[in-house]
Length: 497
Image 1: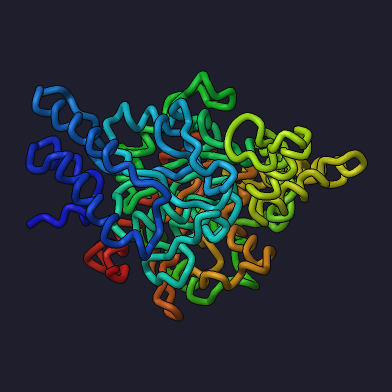
Image 2: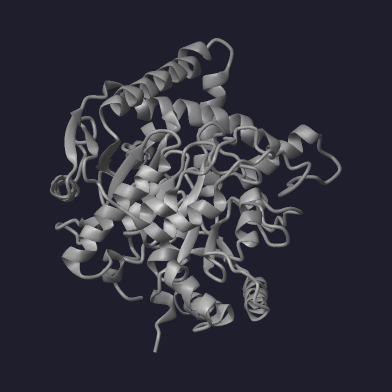
């Protein structure tokens, strides 16, 4: 008897294409899994049972007629609740958009549907993607399937938890400062932040427009590559979309190798604040790469030490501008409109009731940084640091093909542990933020368990702009070496729910 929920996306698609399984069978198996475990995990905010089954039936009808199916046709997916979906809610984890039904699909949503991928529903997230733990969701936190008392990462913790608990074989996240890679790291899954502009942002609710990037999440490198190929590509509706061919990511994932590659290790990505077990697993990964034929090159990128400070000026500044549209007058929550109050009063009351504490904190920080007399000192200076970070990457990539680092300084921390300490929370993104500021591509994949707590550790791979295929080439080689060493994918070790 096939355990459908344990199949990879590639295996699932192949069995559907051959007729061994139907798309309806696969969808029903995952819906049953959601029903069985999601009350504990809380990965989903909305499950579209009828819509998912209708999509699955359409795939089976296509196959019955002999029509050509795409490489992921019939495979279920969990979609982060930041992409608009016609006819089903998009809340962005906020009370401000509770119950809002978009009248259109995001470009990414359209591409998923065109590829006959079955969208199971929308996943939980930090409100407006602001957070590293999914504790900032207005609808309650998500648990990490490895230990439900711990965080699944953020802001895309719902998507990573859905993968790690076998509620879906594929998921979509967004990455502004690490919100795909950090959740992947702490849940033992694979997450990719494509090159900025490689995946359309049209229909993705904006947090920080120069940093936000949608990307694939999966349990294997090949599955992530197959999903990457579906969602990437030029979109005339997005002015920042890159008009260039999608790099050959699937080919790279099928032919993973690091032989003859130069792999950089940045000295700034270790030291105080890094968990001993994380560094141990990272050092072992570097030795593994060396054993696979890679040349290891030590790198010094001094501006990376300033990345966190620059990010927490640039991102709040852009969010204060983007979130100004949520005024209670056009869509979403409206509070205090009793006929006696002005529009300004209604807007103020709506934002007070609808925005959570972290969103308010970042709006206030950003508004202050952009205010008259402070713009050059704060936002302007942060953009200069951003340029230095990009220059450090450019210099590094003259010497190496890819850079590797720990994805996060620690394993998953306990829910509530950092809730009252914003700085400690922000440090979770220490290794991931430089890539967002520079706009290049990065991946996190599992590289073992930390000996102190038996929780997953992530290896981050960083590639130059539009060289996303290098992530998959290296990632597939590392993944294959781990599978050969332990006999099965790391994710199989996650505790049963």
